[in-house]
Length: 435
Ligand code: UDX
Image (cartoon, rainbow, N blue to C red; front, side, top):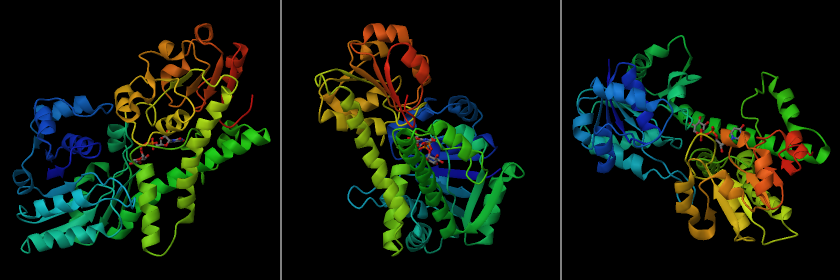
């Protein structure tokens, strides 16, 4: 059993804390936001993740998982202190903003006692480990510590699943002693996944290089989808054929409205900035960023084109979250597509089973909000699917046709059986094939 303090209780810190407690470690999660800690101490979760609640309650009850605003009490006893605070993009430079990491490093430094490993879980630019080390050393020259990079690869909505079923565990270290402590922490995964112990700067790069590669992979299949539509091929068949090559792999080849979320846009931008900083421009990543943005604008135009004969017509938008299974609208392609359509139409009604409240805080009164699919589509001239919610797969097409003004569907997630939709008398467009 190790004693672990985790600074930051967001989408990374909280699932990681719960997971490590479940593995038998004594975990204390720290956050500056008192309200958050109060809620967690009352047994209330502050974010939704599939499977999180059960493990959270179990480990709070057994005393293995605790929450506090007091960094000192959490850190002074800890064998490992993990930094899991936000690294949002700087509004102007788009570089990762490290002010929360540096502030946390300075604060925790004061309370280190005995040998402690400080592990960076947040996604941080190459060289941040060196900076954190320097800050701690400057604040507390007597501290006995090592800094490691410990990137996380959890997907939102699947964080608990991914925590217990990692593809790999990457440990970026500069001292054998620190590496041994982390190997002890992750001992339960020995034999279950690959371990990669590398230089700290390599580890920091692995996280960005992986996310940027996945973003490029998605953008690649999106471009192939456009090509297939023009060339008379079917992107679903093309993706299948590509994915059967184990060097390519079948995952992340679903074309759609572009990638979004709290990681890919932020991390691709940060990586591109790092490339510039080191004088090694990353052209593939730069192009991916620009073209992923252009794609969203083009899709907005594409929907608008479907109502060119009656420009005042109602547009129903189904799906606002950046992907299915979450209420998160951060950098959601749906939001950017709507922002493009707003330039041409003020008759847009949006629906999402989970993300309506979050979308309201971004889109305000520029669109109308519907509580149900039926409300969104009633009297609509076109319905556009932008997030892959299971509910949209089960659309009652007869009912939809009876309530829409003109039966048109633009399916940007390839959710529906196009042939069936057309049989029901709709005009139908999807991604990567023409019907
Ligand atoms: C991602 C990484 O997958 C995860 O490893 C990292 O730790 C955090 O960033 P997440 O942002 O939760 O996770 O979402 P993910 O499931 O990867 O999807 C990202 C975006 O790509 C979404 O907008 C999604 O709709 C889109 N996507 C994904 C596609 O358009 N097609 C695909 O085939 C896969």
